[in-house]
Length: 167
Length: 72
Image (cartoon, rainbow over all chains, first blue to last red; front, side, top):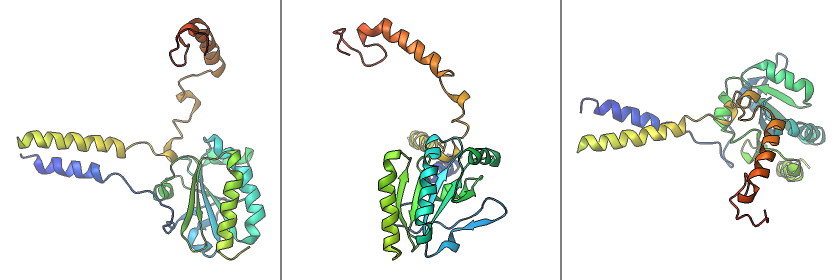
């Protein structure tokens, strides 16, 4: 019985361990991350714009496929109010830089080497994208990337821009 | 009796602990390395699989168990 309290405390700690995931319909967690060069990316600075936050890693093959699509979308919808932020979750920055040489990104790339932002958003796989409306609320989440997803994802982007009154 | 319950509770909680401490999707960089794969050489694996399938085809090969009817 002496260890009763200790056992109870350990049990409680384990049970509490599970964290809740970022859900569609809730405000997107704020973040501030280093970007390429010496600049910083702040989600709060993008208020009023539709933001696509995409978690990717250099070791993830579908991420490589998604980059050309995101480049296209940034070029097409950027002037209409879309900002794409690719959040890299590699532990080593060099890995990400190497990836970017072979797979250039024409959108904002941020680096989350500690995984803090990933913890807040809880992406369910690699890549996972969160579509954040102009009101700062997560509109949609998408896990993985296939070529056949292109149209559906693009229509979601267009719908988010239309909802923000930027058509 | 209480001790038994405590043991049960502790076991259950420890099992939950395993669940919450799993590797998260964004932490799988090391697991994605080629040397972490079960098969080091894709061609070699396919070659071995082909041989295995040819030898064991009558009982379904590497797929589901068949009856040797030649229909799989």
